[in-house]
Image (cartoon, rainbow, N blue to C red):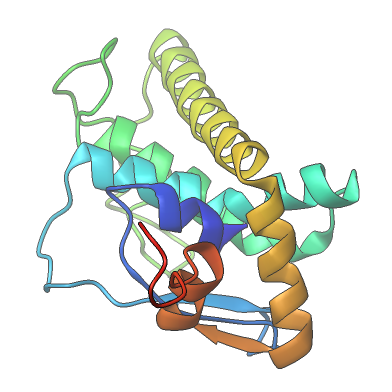
Length: 185
């Protein structure tokens, strides 16, 4: 799911390879190879990052009609990026250019003397609505991409079962096979 969503999102980082060989806590992995080093990201790139992260859960819903615990890290990461967009980067239409403290200041000691002041219940409610709305929009986009390209999703899954690791070149060949020589284009 991650790979196919990233493949079709113009603002997603380019895919490097996809594997179903477990790595650490991941049961499989899509790795990306950004074309340049980035010191900052724009809103579209952050939205693409969330949408790609939610591609795994969307694929489970579409293909398995069920969910697994394997998406825990993706859900945590996408929710974190969404909160940062709304609370740190001022990327909320409703809240505008406002920095909103979320959680502690990162102090690992029991007494946190630099704790940030909490926000009002009204502002927190707007934050929660904005984050939920952003995550829902990104999830719906992942579902749409995977639904529109369901046969490619199945082909990729079959290829991964066969060879376990797929490069970007193999992915391009799978989705856009070269035309036989001599045939009209």
